[in-house]
Length: 346
Image (cartoon, rainbow, N blue to C red; front, side, top):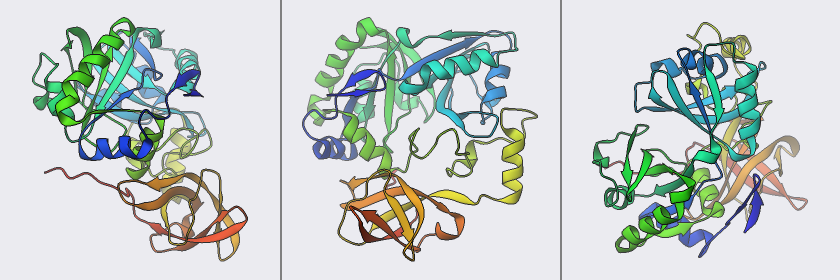
C-alpha cells in the first residue's frame, strides 16, 4: 500500500506480473475509486465543456462517452478526462485523482455559461473490470444486456443489485467496463464481481499492473506524457483536438502548432541493450542528451523492456537508435511504433 493522489492505494495484491497477465488473458478487477468526478448541468452545460476541452462534447449522444483534454490557454493539459453525456443538459466527467480540485476550480473559473458545476467525487466509487472475459463477468451482474453496449458508450442500470453507471471504457488496452456506484455500495459490488469472476480466474489488481498495462497500450498518464507544458499534438493525441470548434482554451496556440508542425513529440522505445529504463532517465542521441523518459517498465505480456520518451521530432521516428542513461551507463535502445500491444478484436 502506498500514498497516491491523496489516497492509500494497493500497488499489488498477488503480484504485478500475475495481475497484468490475468487482465491480458482473462479478467482483472481494479478499485479506481480514487478517480474524481465533476458534474455539469444546465442549458449551456455542453458549451462550458467545449470552451475548455479539446474534443467536441456537442457531438455526443445520450449514453456516449468521450476522451478529451482539459486545456490551459497555452494549449497544455490541465488534465485528461472522460466526458459522459447523461442528458443534453447533464454531463459527468471522470478526472484524475490528484487533479480533481484543480479541474473543478478551472471549470468554475471559466463558467460564463448558464451551467452549474458540482464537485461530485464523494458520490462515486469506481470499479474497473478489464480483460477478454470482462463481458462474461459483468453480464452476470447487470440487469441490461452489456453485449449491446459499444466501446465508449454506457448504460445506467442495476449492477449487483445496486444503481450504477456501467461504461465500456478502460485504461488497460483490453475490453472492459468501468462501473460507477455509490461509495456505500462499493464493497458489496466488489465482492459480487470477484465471486462472479471466480470461474474465469479473476484477480484483484493494483496500481502496478494498471501502470504496466496502460504503458503496453501506450496510453498517456498525467504528469508523465502529458502536463501543463505539453500539447495534445506533442503527446500524439491530435485526434482529440477539434479545431473546427470556433473557440476553446488554447485553440489559437494549437492551430499555429498544427500549421507549423511540432518540434518534439512522445515516442515509444524498446531497450536493445541489457537494462530497464525508468521514468525521468535521460535519453541520448549520438552520445548527447536529447530528451527524457516519461514512462518505462518491463512489459510482462511482451517480455521486453519498453518505455515512452519526449524527443525532438527529428529523433522520434521508428528505427532511430537512441541510448538511455541508466545509473551513469548509456544503454542502447530503439524507437518503435506504438502501441506496443494491441488486443485482438476477433
